[in-house]
Image (cartoon, rainbow, N blue to C red; front, side, top):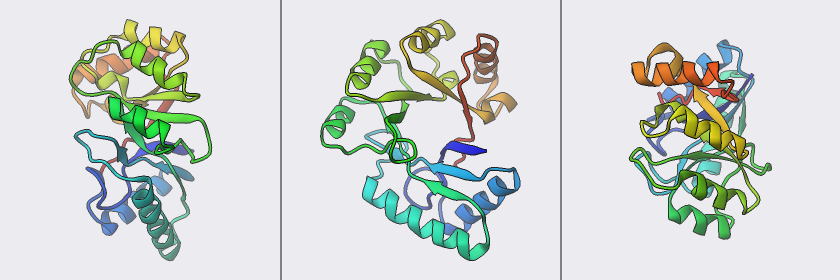
Length: 196
């Protein structure tokens, strides 16, 4: 199994606070059967932090060395959770984004927690830059309805649902929406979004 969304890199965003926590997370993911994880620190102006690709690469390499030393059999792949703001377009123009796995045209994107207008149009503008989009945890955006998400899917966006939503980690509304996405066949990727 592969986890395409997690915050396992230590001390860079709102995820793992230190190397010890990252190692514990690695042990747990490995024991659960994961073999590869795409470490996904926040990238962009948003509440979770703004981790440069260079910092993410350095910390990912350090964690990979620590995994090997501890006998944790997990492949660490590049990724970022891109916060959707106007600044993201500047980063795309300057090749300042990190795709899923590092060499794909897939971007993991996170919408702002507060309602924004024209979600479909904004995501379309990213897609015309040549990227395919994986929308992180749509069940957790209070303003995004299942119908809105279905329209995004019709336009080519894929949805990443948080496993924690299915056990009520983010409340009953996120749980109900996650189930509704499943009932509508709108769950494309399931990920931990593990923070610590």
